[in-house]
Amino acid sequence: MGVLAAMGIACTLSACEFMGLTTGEEPAAPVETSVSADAIHLEEPAPSAIGFDVVGTAGEIHVGPTEPEPTPEETVSGDAASEAGVSENSISENAVSGNEAVAGEGGSDSYDLTALRNMNFSEEQMAQIMDFYNGAVFAGDSVLLGFRNYAAKSSDGFLKSLQFLAAGSFSLHNAFWPVNDKSVHPLYQGAQHPVWESIQMMGAKKAFLFFGINDVSLGMDESISLYPQLIDKIHELSPDVEITIISATYTLKDAGTKGLNNTNLAAFNEAIRAKAEENGWGYIDMATVLSDGEGNLAPKYCSDGFVHETAAAYEVWTKMLIRYAAQQLGFETPEMEEILQKAPETEEVVSGNAAEDAPAEAAENTAESTEESTEAPAAQ
Image 1: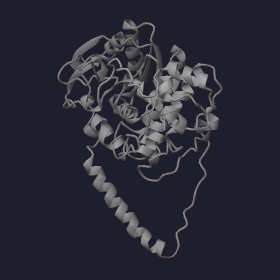
Image 2 (image 1 turned 60 degrees about the vertical axis):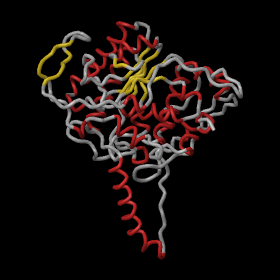
Image 3 (image 1 turned 180 degrees about the vertical axis):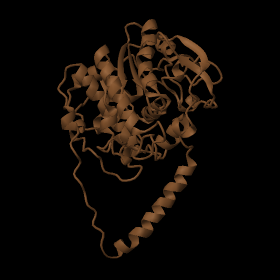
Image 4 (image 1 turned 90 degrees about the vertical axis):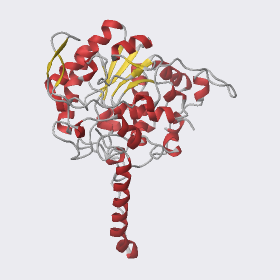
């Protein structure tokens, strides 16, 4: 079953029809605009006290001493997204078809998201929504790489049509590095390129940017100033590309380290939202809908006890992208106040022998969780 149908969005037009295919025909080979998840997993550069500092006007590079690279626990790697966030185990058939897989601690939504799930569009409207993302590219770090892997595993035409430039440890800071053996630019056509060059080579019409998680520990003011500089570089080569910012999502409660924490991520998002309003960029508040209502990534949506996300989270990403396109096209959509209704609290009743067995079962689950976490590479 396609993701769109499973989301409860009324639409009888099949994914194949959206893509111009008929039953029994093989889909046309797409133009190469992204690479496999394995190909994107780049070796992370060793921390160094000498790097590249972006100064002056957009794209001006100065070689000299900069802040040291973030320590391993402060940088989000691609391996963790692939292995922990969107592994074969975490993206089950049920998750892709719309039945949410539960990972992390707990299983209830912080927000019930009923209004988001119950969006209703006609066949013609859904065709326009799919066309809205024709020629769009999504660029960002390993959390976005997780969405790329989720989309690749889906059988839904909408998700499979999306294009990505995503890499582990990618940030606003190292987006300005020259291509060399230490750079982590996403691959396009088998090679690294600065993201603005890849966007031009792809002939993209829209760019959806997801940055911040690997930046906030390197200085808030500089990180905030780099976003418009990156967009300026994109517009130098592709002046007509429409820009949309996707807010940086949070870490699990109390999982942040040093500068990479939810207080800084929230401040970064607020500053970038203001810049988006000033400059006419689009903005999608992904952080809030995936939060626990207290400024943290909800446990249900966390795959690794840190920052990477589950299939259930990427289902919400999909719905938010559909809502965003519908808004831009002038269709009626639920307001955020409707979406962010608190989920009803449920209370488990444990009685008799079950109550006696509960502590042992909890300990067993903890042991299993610890064992699983050692199998997936830690975020770096």
